[in-house]
Length: 235
Ligand code: NAD
Ligand code: ZN
Image (cartoon, rainbow, N blue to C red; front, side):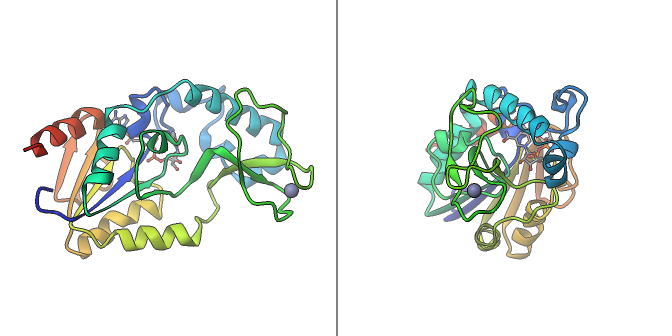
């Protein structure tokens, strides 16, 4: 990292765990008796928008009370310190935004943004109200039902974000941090970076499918390991 000019970091829910935001794959991932995979889908929303909005309202409440942790802070410092740094995040909590991260690509959108479910042509809008002003919230343009502007299971990522993530793989160091590395296409980026000749490292509490593909897998908490690395990089 000392000699590197281009750094790319892919982050997942584990980066926000120390802030108190539950990950999906873990004992705290359940809400009532539902699995996220059964709620974060267009079908679930079409079937029962109230139920899905209740879950999102609960998550917005939780996240509103959370602050960026040392992992977000270190990543934000690096985002400004390298000649080119890209941070590809799967997180929708915007804690990277609040930590002041440059070059951030939010692959899965933001829980603080809403969009029209009816596709009336309204551009997604920001809504940070906790609790929500209206339940369920509606579109300011057509008055129809609004949805969270996040990428659900079974939906495609924005082409501009995919292109940016693709370009970011041309780098010298690629770090994958706090992600179970099972959700494609984000998970494929580490292989792509490797083919570009990047030095690749994983930082995660547990081994993942990416562990065997990286140059070094560091198992531990992101907030501790990233802080250690930052300290060692300081001249
Ligand atoms: P995931 O829940 O599948 O995996 C989280 C990973 O982080 C696990 O491998 C776990 O071992 C690891 N982890 C937990 N605590 C950690 C810590 N302190 N340090 C390092 N690693 C730690 O999450 P994912 O891979 O991001 O993918 C699931 C999807 O869930 C994504 O699409 C994302 O949008 C969504 N999600 C987002 C948030 C958020 O915005 N904070 C929270 C939950 C889920
Ligand atoms: Zn609308």
